[in-house]
Image 1 (cartoon, rainbow, N blue to C red):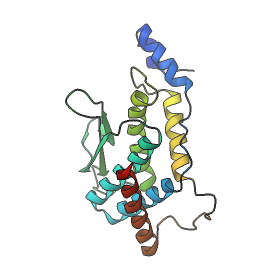
Image 2 (spheres, helix red, strand yellow):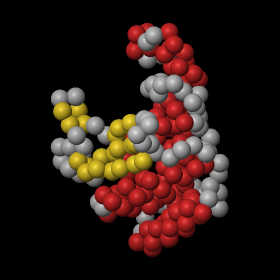
Image 3 (cartoon, rainbow, N blue to C red):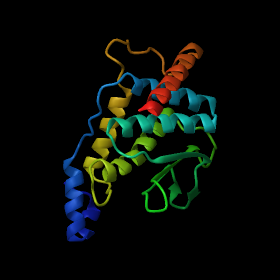
Length: 198
């Protein structure tokens, strides 16, 4: 089964679509730092600090691209989502060119009520745009189409990044405590220090 727009694609684009659809996962090497980063992003969203959210997004995306040995994308987080008659824009991926690297833009507040986006929704938006980047840089696809394989890859990244380290119990609450937030921030500083040396 393919999405309806498949039949409107040119023959060469159908081949790319088929390649994308056949790839259902993106395997990341094990690391306890994925969950540390997602916890930090959760805490940053709760603080409603746009700059802090942007830093956490950069850290998390950089962990993924470094693990997969692909170029990083620039990431910026803006405030209120753009909206029009077609709805609200959650995220945007712009592929890189000779003038600069790829750019992912995310918005952290809803358009109508200006509320901070829920953590899991925001994380999935980040991973959705990051999957477009990985289509070009990791899978070496000529185009990045929305295929069933694309959405499976997005889900596979989400599950891997949200998985607890084997030696850590599943937390009983979704909101990290103040102490947990401090620990996560210390871990992020250590991650950035190690990545800067690599």
